[in-house]
Length: 254
Image (cartoon, rainbow, N blue to C red; front, side, top):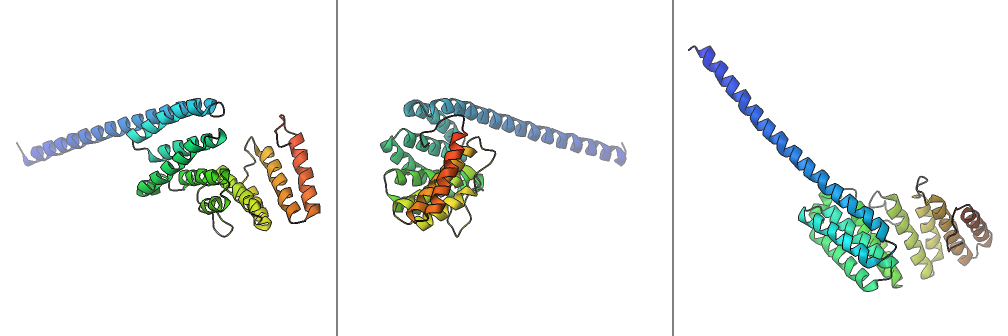
């Protein structure tokens, strides 16, 4: 057999080996992608149920959030784990379950500290960490510790820094609570500035945009009134009332 034949056989063997390795790697990658999609689908289906339970009952919401936490922990999906914690934290606030709320924010902040390196990789735009900080600030606001609430919320955004995170609803909420916190401690000028800053992050495509605009105008009116800017205050109140009257429902704030 000639050297040419040996070389040809060698090339064929090398090609077949490479093809086998590539096929095996592709199969592993496909299996991993399928598993990831399946886990995501499980979590999404649980959040669908959470969406139904959230405003009705804290305990039933916690059952499904705990299932999400178990899945996230088993598969080391740390952003999903953190999202579940701050979602349940917000739910605890809504239902005034303050003992559970305090425990949840403690768990969330401890989790962020323990997994800081992982979260730098899996939460590069800071969205989920901002959500947990927002929940922490909300807890302190809810117990009237406005100084601590300001301290926490200022970790996400301030008048002199760009926001950490890309979720406009979280940024708007953070600015809103910063403004209310400053209002509560009597710093009406800063309160008004934060309301104005938060208004820049309202999303016109949000179904609640008109209500959020009405709330913004109402809070602007409060701060302007406290600063004895009465013309601006009453103009803001009138705009808020007009927006509220256009809504297809009648919120309590009206």
